[in-house]
Length: 115
Length: 116
Picture 1 (tube, rainbow over the protein chains, first blue to last red):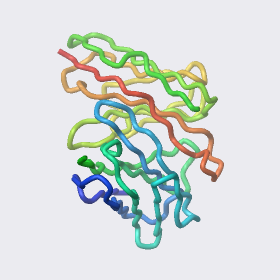
Picture 2 (picture 1 turned 30 degrees about the vertical axis):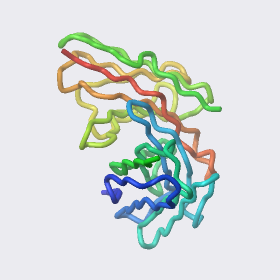
Picture 3 (picture 1 turned 90 degrees about the vertical axis):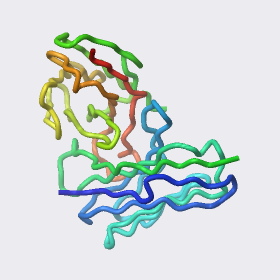
Picture 4 (picture 1 turned 180 degrees about the vertical axis):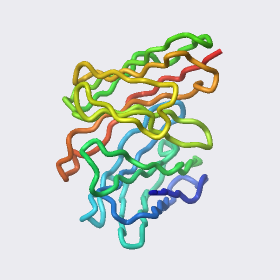
């Protein structure tokens, strides 16, 4: 059974700092990995999706990397801003399932960026 | 932009009531999902559907049923609401697998359900 772990559970940094969020998964036979952001009391917003054949994806100040063999992904946030404060979740989709296959989610890292 | 909408942001119901949560997506996605999210337990999949009238149980289907009569709409039904079903309910949709960035899963804003 796939398990996804995110460390740390919470992180507080001063504005302007570069930071890395970690995600690890136990079964490396994944189809893709997705990073989401969730603001308090809201739904999830997709940030980046990395296919299993890719090593990284970038969007603005965000860069996500994937090392499938070691079961790890990182989300790098450059020059953090107070508006980046949210919970960040990673989710993996297993290889070989039907089109409707499910995502397995980590419990998230709660990020606070202090002005 | 993909839009996934849910019928209510907040809902308060009594124990034993039948509750309907509606979800609509406007991007012609084949796959739709219902999750619940609870502190310390994360996101758990209740049911999903990969086509009209098709449904599959997720990890915690007990006490719930679903309906998908039209491609854009996926309903979650609590047959007889109980206090342990108080939670945040999140709907999501995703296109058929293509092996590209369009495999992204999109979420609605959530419904905070309280059962008294």
